Image 1: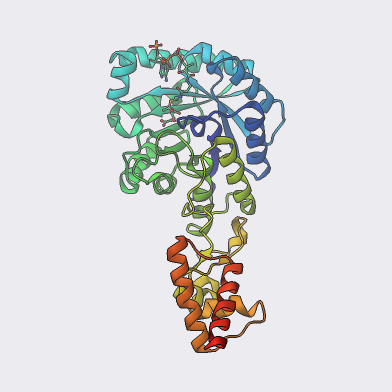
Image 2: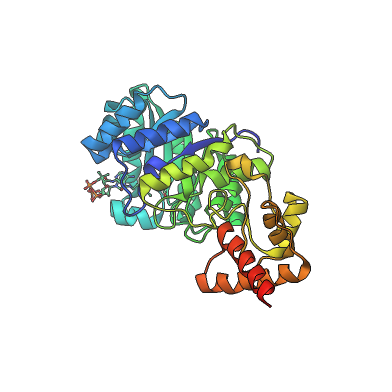
Length: 377
Ligand SMILES: CC(=O)SCCNC(=O)CCNC(=O)[C@H](O)C(C)(C)COP(=O)(O)OP(=O)(O)OC[C@H]1O[C@@H](n2cnc3c(N)ncnc32)[C@H](O)[C@@H]1OP(=O)(O)O
Ligand SMILES: O=C(O)CCC(=O)C(=O)O
């Protein structure tokens, strides 16, 4: 687990999330941002979708980005021609490898499936293109058949094979075992592609990397088909902070990138979302806030600035004396023990009524009200 390449597919699998449709400007802006923060490879989309998608992909390929750009193709020569027409020189060619998929898409005719793969790889290689092959539904495929397809892909000229957990049915243990065996069987590198149907996409992506995959598919915010994909920000930060692997991405800009993709996709990020959710560095609970005020590492796995956040201490239903006093001190207000407790009681009542934490102004107003009522008594 040393060098890991990030192949971000926000612009392909991310955009496949139901209801998401980026326009040309949004696709260009996201590609530029991914490139600017150091993402190594970008799967820019599916040229076979037609003219407007091709225009957007051609616009990205004309930018001269440092990131390597890949077009996603079926094992169909006209798909590859469409990718070439966009100026792309790196082709990802996908082929179903499970019995379920081959039955549905190729009427169970696996020989025809393999022939289409051979024809499309050969076509692309003859054009001087770099080729990667994706085994769609690798996780549910018969292992011997998967290995055969991957070996053929290698023999026919593919430079990488993608192991896809297309419907997100693996856990980290089974991912490790399957990917490890595939890595050992091939000479070309393996890429890991995971889905989040059981909330395991990031964990499975990490397991795939640990098993020897040299590249990983991610999407910003985990956007993607159904429950989404492994999130770029989660994979990058877990590699960095849990495994000590810095993939060279400018992590303080991850939050800005998340906001860009949330706006373009119309899919907002839940507050508890790892790394980019607005609560990731917010502390309301008394015990936590007390700890964080002494030493932030008591309740933070790394500094908020590392991913673009600032720490927030929030007064609400669960807050205690230390947090309240800290907030009030910033306004030159020092309360005695009795006053502090009565303000805290009032904070709890109001938080329950408003069903949220309080703004600083609301806390200051409660202090004022408590003082007035004490003075009257
Ligand atoms: C797991 C994944 O994420 S795979 C990627 C999924 N992404 C998308 O589907 C988004 C973009 N797709 C599209 O715009 C369209 O589906 C297109 C342009 C690719 C094809 O559109 P259409 O010609 O209208 O076909 P449609 O989408 O209804 O059906 C898919 C066809 O591709 C075939 N197909 C599916 N996967 C593959 C493959 N890997 N290689 C070759 N053919 C394939 C299907 O068998 C079916 O073929 P048929 O038309 O001969 O029956
Ligand atoms: O690249 C491929 O082969 C398919 C990728 C994919 O999106 C998936 O399998 O979920």
